[in-house]
Amino acid sequence: MTTHNADNERIKRHNGHAGAGGADRGPGAACHRPDASRQCHRAPRPVMRWKSRRVGLIGSIILLLALAGCATELRVMMATPTLYLTPERDVYADLAAPLKQTEVRLSYITDRKPETDENGKLRYGSGRSLSVGFGTAVVDLGTEISWAELLTASRTRHRLDPVQLELRDVTEIVRGPDTPVPYTLVDGKIVLAPAWFEKLKASSEMFRQNLVRQLDLTPRKEVFLYIHGYNNSFDDAAFGMAELWHFLGRIGVPMIYTWPAGYPGLFGYTYDRESSEFTIYHLREVLSLMSSFPEVEKIHLIAHSRGTDVAVAALRELTIEARAAGVDPKKRFKIHNLVLAAPDLDVDVAVQRMGGDWLAESVHRWTIYTSKADKAIGYASTLFASPRGRVGSFRPQDAPDILKAWVKITTANFSVVDFSGEGAFLDGYVHSYFRDAPSVSSDLVLMLRDDLDAGSPGRPLEHLGEKFWRVPPGYPRARPAQSGQR
Image (cartoon, rainbow, N blue to C red; front, side):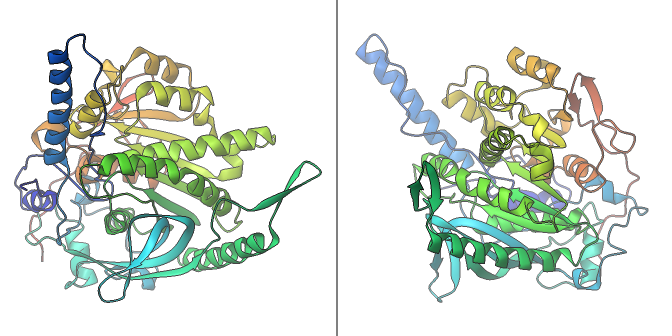
């Protein structure tokens, strides 16, 4: 099978060549495949019914070939955000000594089923687990370079040599009890099984202790939790969070929530979509637990593609639970930023979930990144017959009326940021633009690291009216930096 190799395209861009956008298995670079088993509407005549089914099948096959990238052993670091091409901005100078190395130690939370490879080492595939595991993994940003060389590459527009990434030392520290939860009913109240509850307490405390040790390395007691999308492996998620955290200046604690995605074959999207429903309960419980730790001051959720549905659904359930108990969900769950990048969400469904339960009031800042140039979301919109399209594939001026109406009445710190300009089309940034496009990754840094709202002096997005914004060309403006990697 001939497919587009996203890493080769990244290498071309690192060397100053514009490449055509295509499949991207990377974290935050998940691609989309339609439900191949989806039946078309019944036509009045048999010949028309066959044509309709044939069109649907052909569309599915085309999307599979165009977007389901084959695995590759090579993974290279994302392009340098435009923000860092100015010598005045040095976010690494005051780092603690243990953080000044090419290695990035991540925490992970997963309900993927643990497996072993041919060498007996732990790995996680696409199988589903009834329990949640917590552990650590190491991503090396540059397998044969020094910290000084990594810093040079991190401030370079066109790298002479790509920075290759490597994942190793995946270690599961603790695993919680299986779900569903065994219980008995006593006087109309649910009482959890003692053995199950004790295992939960023990695993939760071990999780907390490990998280506190990581928080001790940083003055910002914050967790940056990345939730990947469809067709992403465990490795994809780890690579994406490691490079993103590096460009955030290595603040807070980097963590991935990786769910059972990446099922192979024709029905990969349908399996992954069901897995995204399966994992909501686990993510909800993880967020509730982590936010209860007094050592954690803020939680930042960065969700991409199908992972946005997982994040929104979990937040909705938490919000309903908190408000039923008379608690402010914003204070209870400490979610400072909720970022939905390239959301694979039907507009009607999203407005009902987000607007119907006032979810924007449950977080400090809610940001959606969208792009008309996102072909993956565009295909998903067509093949799932979304009547008003998907949230991740429109320009603000073309936004459906139902979405405009909701945005208008929302009083929360909410913004929709568009990346559909000239650079999005010509430079080939498609579904993974939130991290591959230097202007968009710069905006992400300004929001997450500098805690800036859209349109503030340090984050000069172009205002399009209401809560809609646009990433202008060359954003944010920066003086040209020297090319080449020393």
